[in-house]
Image (tube, rainbow, N blue to C red; front, side, top):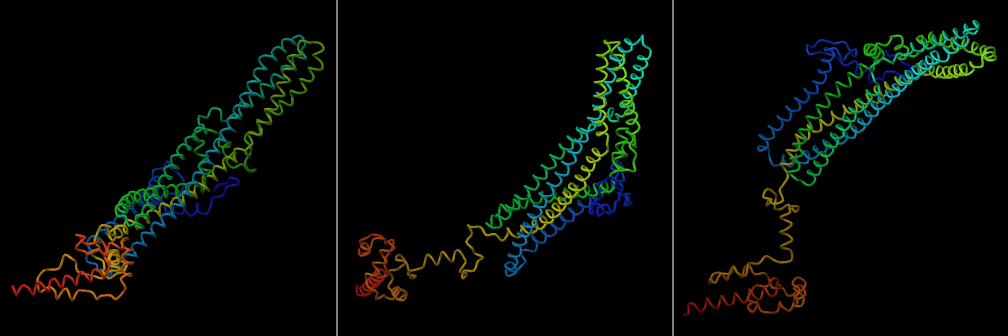
Amino acid sequence: MSLSHGYRASWWTYVLHQVPHTNFQFEVVDGNFAPQDWNYQQALLFLAGIAGLCLAISLVLICVYLIRFCCCSSQEEEGSKNSHACCITWSCVAAVIICCAGIGIGFYGNSETNDGVYQVTYSLMNANHTLTSIALLISDTVQLLSSVVKSDLTQLEEIFSKRTDFLVIVRNTRREVESVAQNLAELSFWKEVELNLNMMAEQINFIEDYRWLAYILLLLLDLIICLFTLLGLAKQIKWLVIVMTVVSFFVLLLSWGSMGLEMATAVGLSDFCLDPDEYMMNQTQVITNISPDILEYYITCNQEVTNPFRQKLTMSQRSLSNIHPQLHGLEREAIPQFPTAEKNLLVVQAMLNTTEGNFHHLVALLNCRGLHKDYVDALKGLCYDGMEGILFLLLFSFLSALSFTAAICSLPRAWKRFQNRDLDYDDMDEDDPFNPQARREIIRTAGRPHLPSFYSYSSSCGSHNSLRVSAPPISNAPVSQYMNQSGLFSGNPRYENVPLIDRQSPPPSYSPSMRTSFISASQEETDTHCQTDPVS
């Protein structure tokens, strides 16, 4: 259990940690986070393989459904086809809507994961800055003390060589300064460590950028497929729906694959977040060879853990305190007798003031609160935001996989019922008023009665009976009314009064009165011709 102040494992961490860990031999594996252990790796791969099993099941279901569709669709009755058409279309639309909801969840999860990883990298950079500042401050202070010992204190010993009492004070000051330098040098626990937290943060950030971009492209691909699928269903564009079905099959593979990766990552991260302190202490000690007391001090940061730097800091503070009265005694008693020693004493006092300032700054940096805050912030970013984002991405992958599985099964039935615009609507009911062909026939025949063509009359004597039967009744409407109607449709009413014979061709439009006159004249000519033939 984590003892870090300010961090507590979330409830979903406990839930995911309870997921059974089983290796390839179906043996239960310890749930403690151990990524170097082969059995633990097998347990995570086994969890990822569950998504592969779901992929295989979905592919089998798709194949069985499509085989049944291809083999049994011809045996369905027309009534059942019409009744199932609406259901199939709405099932496709429902699958697309669920996928769009999953896409929204995926965008949120991707953003949360990115925020969590960014918090981790930011904390690593802050910790690296603190550790680098500690190492640099210690090295500068030790270098300053060493330079003073080698130059100014050595010169003071030469100046006071004839005065034993002054020489003893200078040598005591020299020993105190060397003791401070030695104690401060032993405080530098990060100087020889090869681990660069700043470089690690950059590598994590680099990987996270590509992960974020990959998920953005996957989400956009899913969204484009959903939009074009809806467009194809709305406009009944068969080729577009077919293309989207094929692309949906490849996205289905990506969805199940990403789900397996996210499932293994979520379970592994929950194992780490349940007790991160122990793993971080062990791994950091192996990599950096830092004392376990120092690691425990910074990771736990509570009153039960003793500060490992307290003894060295106390000794350094005591030595610096002893130097002050010695320098003041030399300044008061030795300067009047040895004026040449004033410059060296001023340099030593300036060194002492600088060392004390650096010492107080070093004490603040070595305190556990700064580095522990960075550690807790990194845990919160990884185990709160990062874990939440991965769970939302897992839900997105699951919804996307289910939606595309349903869409791949439903879209072939949907596009089969699409009618090409160039077809003659042979399978439609001619009496249906919504039939496009019937609407064209109604528009074409509206306003004029059905008459036989002028070129269809035979010159046979027996054909006049059929002509009389098919002739429409003569209307008693005034001629001006027909002229007005003729002018409405043809735009030239005077041309309607010209006899048809003088036109040399049938008119583009003609009034009912002219049709009746022409049919009557044709009948009379036919009767006359039939009567003259027997006489001749």
